[in-house]
Image (tube, rainbow, N blue to C red):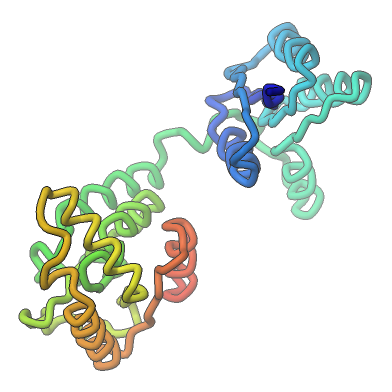
Length: 272
């Protein structure tokens, strides 16, 4: 049996290479059956260091994802790739040059600037702490401090979605909806301004709940996992969402990233 060829891809960066890695993995995730090998060349600061990375990439006919701020280094890579036929995706300079052209403002030309300890960084840390402190409906009297509030019955993804939104810098509180429990009355103050109701398809909820019971070493068939109970909880949550007049998001078949993006748009949240 013939072995599958390996696609070698190279991360070349003058910082930690996080941006290039994310783009590369997003692209390659579309080819789950392709065997890949990543090669990292980070904190590149001299022509010699860059040339070493380029020569190695050429030896493997590698695919290059590059984030280098220094224009001369970027030109060096471009000339080498044109000469050798290598494919190199410069993920920075085409956009830097276009922003400069449109605004007439010179770039600061500092690598890794997005990783500096800015106010935005500390806001993300604060948002993460807030999210953990108020997870699963803890201290609902602090609703006013939240940038947004997620509501949903069990297994609609409230906590992971809250955590992801927190990494974006938003203070998120999530509150579980249970027919036997009253919701905090202060929720009615906010409605569509900062509340999102989460829902999911009944079959998906049943599957998630059964898996959860198995994880806990408990019988997978119970009131919690029964279709009748799930339908009752969905009806209850839909009634609450109607009363609150809040946007509703069905998270079925959506990634956390996609759901987060939709929520930011629905509530017209500011970039933080």
